Length: 114
Length: 112
Picture (cartoon, rainbow over the protein chains, first blue to last red):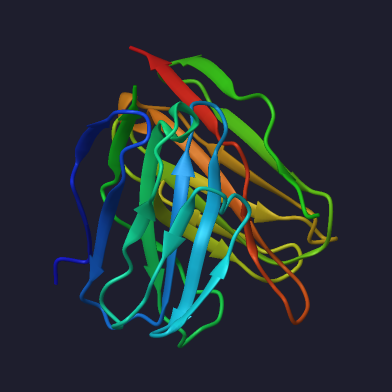
């Protein structure tokens, strides 16, 4: 199993550009999450999904959109990039066998908006 | 809303010293998880505590969940350079709309 994979690893965007961060998991997990991590600020939840076709906002959803058409994929869309979106983005997944199962994180995407 | 606090954010120790860090929640938790993130890496699950007063050990790491299920501690015995990284606690709130909240983490550096 590859676990959770994310692409790209690094990206530099100009203000106003758009991009999609890709996230795929091969563990058949229903729950998937997007976090952003800023230095010294821990992990902030952007969006999450409890299954294909179902998504919901987290703590910091503004400026982002998500979709979940399959169990495996959970892309994160930035429509109009702003410098405040410079961050490291982590995708994570977990199973529903035990409600409080561990989250498996992807390697992250390091995004800079200039 | 629920807050999970980890103070301080940074700690430096000499290799071989013991290290203890704490995690405090503003609300009672259903359970608490600990993750470790190596520099430049991603968070990796270490352990989950569910019961009041629960203690779990992983080699030199000892984790404890408070009796009131509002705090937790991580103790590392005889730190090694491989212990370097950021340790996050994350607490699941109780109730129907349970959610996981991460603390800001504590970054541990170990002087050889």
